Image (cartoon, rainbow, N blue to C red):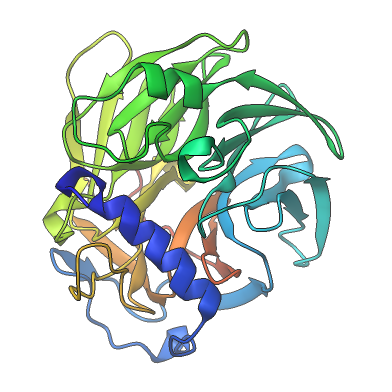
Amino acid sequence: MRGATRILTAIVSVVLLGAGCNAEPPVALEQQTAIGPEGGSFRGLNAAGSTTLLVSGLEGATGSTIGPGRQLYVTEGAAGKISRVNPSTGDVTTFASGLPTSIIGIGGAIDVAFLDETAYVLVTLVGSDVGGGDVVGIYRVDGPSSFTIIADIGAYAASHPPSTPFDIPTGVQYALETYKGDFLVTDGHHNRVLHATLEGDISEFRTFGNIVPTGMDVSGNTVYMAQAGPTPHLPGDGKVVSFRSKSDAVTEIASGAPLNVDVEFGRGRTLFALSQGTWDGAFPGSPALPNTGALMEVDGDGTLTTVKEGLNLPTSMEIIGNTAYVVTLVGEIWQVDGISSPPFGVPH
């Protein structure tokens, strides 16, 4: 595949390999050596407190959010559903089911967000360009198995192709975030962020070169975004950047997170990045090595400090208080306690 699309092939490969599970089982996190990813420092094995497996057995888990009742809501693309997880107990219940399921190992329901207590689901890689027959876009959850398509992102993408090379006309959307009563969507294949309204109007919010946008968080008018970087997925290309709606400027906040897939604010405006890990380098499109992912804290000087390493193919995270909940492609949610260390805050 062409350069601008290779990282998305890598994400697809990671899902397929993770689902097959011929990889070695996860190494106990407390037993990892105290060496942070290239370009970052390491805070120490016990600095983040305890790390606990909260949930296992999820099917194609990718995106997540914190919703009503301060519960975790996680998409399961292989099962076509959203699961609700009690972060205190790890109990899992089905919040909604009947969504389009993944066709090529990644896709279907890939992320979820709440707006005014209503859930909206981002669905990707289910169109005719990958052998499916469903709409790529944002679905509103009207009931446990009832949905309304509010934004046909696949149709927009096909009729407004990006300037960077691509192979999938409908794109590969990765993250959904609310923004001023509307939505922002990253497309890691088409290298852009889309803006979608509740009425279904879609436009380009920000367009990039070959940087592969992934996860987002929003603070006021500012969007903070993770970028995974192209092959060979060097740590320096795994960045956290920020931008605003009325400015063309893109500010680099930090770099050094190989295959960066998410960014989230924690307590006291501490910003965190989620690295999927070190690329194995076997061939363009091969995944990160198992158990090389890391939760990283963004320092005020633009560097990254490793909070917890040894994560096995993480895809997204949520933070409640001083605890991070990390979702992985192997169907797990890991609870990492005590993640923030003072002084807090990043420039914005």
